[in-house]
Amino acid sequence: MIQFYYHPTPNPRKVALLLEELGLPYEMVPVDTSKGEQHSIAYRAINPNGKVPALADGDAVVFDSAAILLHLAEKSGRFLGAPGAAGRAEMLSWLMLAATGLGPFTGQAVHFTHYAPEPKDYALHRYQFEAERHWALFDARLATRRYVLGDDHYSIVDMSLWGWCGGLAYLMGDAAWAKFPHVKRHFDELNARPAAIAAMALATKHAFKAELDADAKAQLFPHGRVA
Image (cartoon, rainbow, N blue to C red; front, side, top):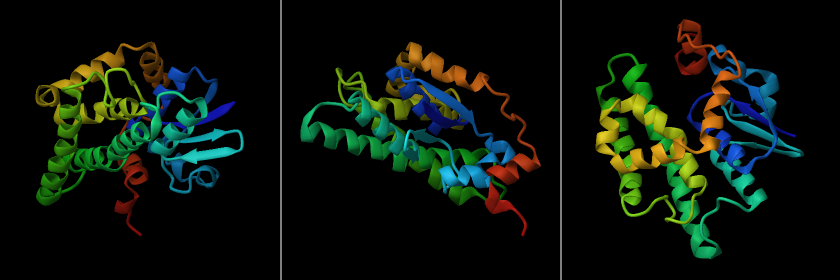
């Protein structure tokens, strides 16, 4: 059975959605990042980068959410977009835009908005600008099609985008949906899918630490630790 190393944050959430859409049997293995479990020797043997998610699928151990999405989609032959070389190129381009641009810039914008100490004006402006620029690319794309890869191609790109919509809402509040209405329409549609409801319910299956106290901050933001 697949072992899925999970914490209720954007990158694991997108993998949870794919697992539920595929109907694959899996065991959710909680990794409480606020308690520092991602830094343990045992978990670093699975993911040397010390982040979630990770996946153990038989002999295959996969980390990084985009790699996991590709692994599972290619294994099942589903949710990969249009067939052929052109379809694959389109899927990879948008998937990597989400993985290397939208997700990281949104995450950094959230960090500097909510957690970073002063002074932070330059960093805050840079990451907010880049996050909103990436979301605008996806919003414009969704203005002309139901899903990112087209009306008939619900794919891992949509799941990747869906996973980060909670981060967008945390970053911008209700203003996010007024600014990116096509993303909101897409988000609402995916939220209604049974697989999305099941994926969100994973967060309730373990008592993850909710308090962002000094120890949690030290585990989540280790660059701030005093040597």
